[in-house]
Image (tube, rainbow, N blue to C red; front, side, top):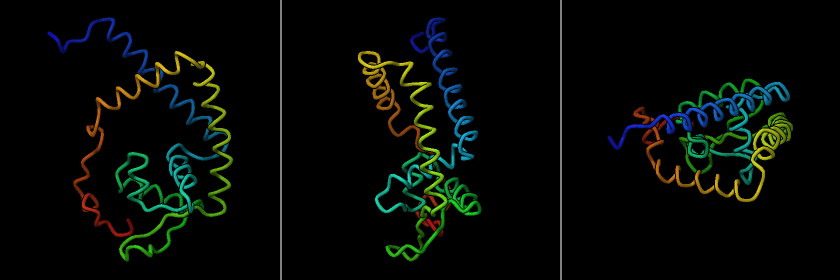
Length: 168
């Protein structure tokens, strides 16, 4: 059958899957150990750090990092308790709020970014090398992303799917 995987297909998949999971875990462990920031916190801090005015709405964070809005909202609540972010009223939409970096959040973002970038370089970039292998991986990644398309976008059937979640 055309949809059956061969032993070679499985070997390639298993190696790739194992590498990806272990790389994710190694990056997360190092991030937590060096800066005290979890991977979910880092994703939000980095997204806020890249925004022009260091603030985003929950729906924009969710879109940027591929999470459901409810997950982002819960994570932001935990980060508020740690003093990394704060919510402020959104002047564009009376129902919405901004999520903004605090001074502590900006420091955490900068510190964790340095260590995270160094880990990515050590575990991935330096191992991959440059040139043809990097270009091949880039082209391959883009083809996989094109094949996936919108299939990775989750259906959040809750009230925030329609953009009506308070504070989003």
